[in-house]
Image (cartoon, rainbow, N blue to C red; front, side):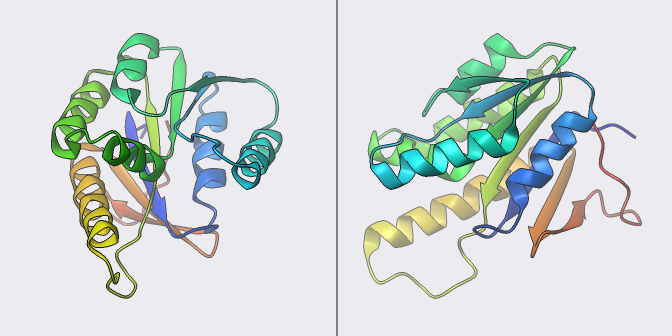
Length: 180
């Protein structure tokens, strides 16, 4: 059964982006990669280049650090599968811009609900470790948890990737194969 919206979550370097890219590739649709990263230093520029190389050719890449709801609204089509990578960097950008994360999350939920084609969203699980030692880090952890919960609630499917292995969280029925 194909799904219109899939949330892929997991820890750093868990394989979540590769899994999400595989979903989009397997859909047979035109592939659109929505990048939320702002490559502000050399190390981050190297990460972006490595990600692009790993994805390979055949992707339309749209760089948008904040208005991913607008990109989804403008660019989704029945013949396209969109991959948003990643919501964690997007949330950082929203917070640094002093925008309202709750309002932006609602905009994003509305955009994915109205998308004309499938949307896969990648995010990080950040709240499973120790409690951060400063107010900003605690706020980020809390906002990330709320964002993940609200997008998972809105998505038709949710997958946790740990150690490169996907675990289907939603729907809960007998671990169905996830396709677009």
